[in-house]
Length: 108
Image 1: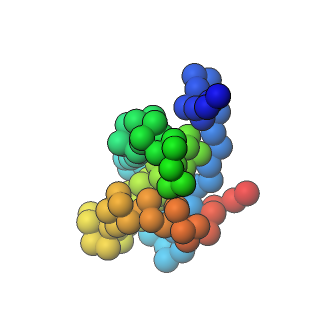
Image 2: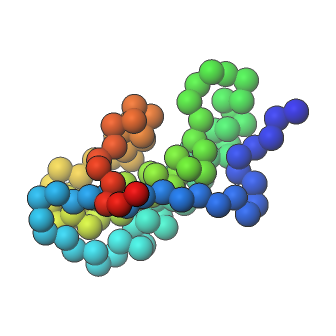
């Protein structure tokens, strides 16, 4: 029997990522975090899990969606990327996650 990782009450803890070059602007970071999670969960979450259940392809779990959301907020807080210069697309952020190529975390 298959049990989804997308169960009500599932708790996920994901780190914040470091902005190494200096200037941080956290205006809108919470909105970015929330919308990033909603995008990942709705676009790649439950429906993708059902479609990929019988395959060996990579699945988006609640933790992956949370990590995606944290990356979206990270880009929003980075004064260099917040206005689009060097900002990665959603697909590029998912590739970073699937390859384990994440920025350093703010704290463990």
